[in-house]
Image (cartoon, rainbow, N blue to C red; front, side, top):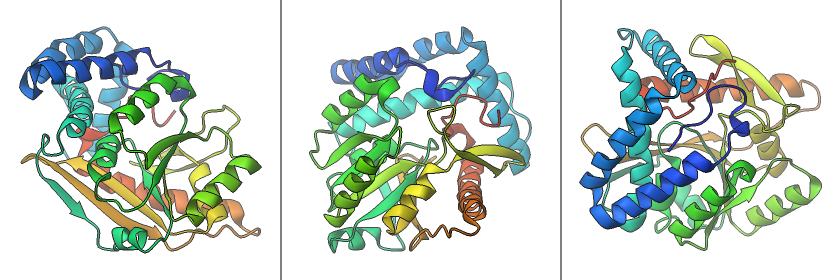
Length: 308
């Protein structure tokens, strides 16, 4: 089970580690149960942590920035190992919740803007997620409660088998992944048709485009400019639908807190000042992500140089 790539671009990482790790977690959970599964994963993750200095540095760099921004003491080496073990727990919980909805503890769902009510009324929309917390587990936990089909837009070519396995484990015909490496006219029409049917789209808004030529914008994040993707704002503006953000964070007392927050009734990108509008939306999202991430720095699972 290997976190995302530290050196180079995140999208250049193959899927061998992630797919192997998910198979191990799935098998261990089925045969041994939660506690034994955690005991089995600990030495495996420690070995990866010891033998991967680039990702180890990326992990500690993130923790240093997050701790400094939050006014916490600098992290020590063992905080980096805890960070990696937390990633293993994330994978384990993603599988556990598919086996038993109550296996990971109580689910606290905060939805002040009534996203569920919108979905139940037949309204389609867009949910922005991130690699903070456990969006995969939220997808599984909500599958029986969310009254609309959901399509997860992501880059799947470097992890096709991994995502196929997740879809199979979810077993929900209303929850699926869709490759969106490029937003061509056919993809745009497909997404518009899905929204017209009352479906919802989920998309990560914290990773830059797959292609080196893909568009990005640099905005402040933990005190330094970081690259965020342009794609979510272009897609949201094209679809002219409500946009929400969602975070699913592990609670210290056990279980998870799933929180929805309305980001925009509609995203508008005027022809005059388009780039400025995109930067404003990205900066606003980065500010929300920053606030959540500094509250739970150990649940940040971008194991590469986010500011490179």
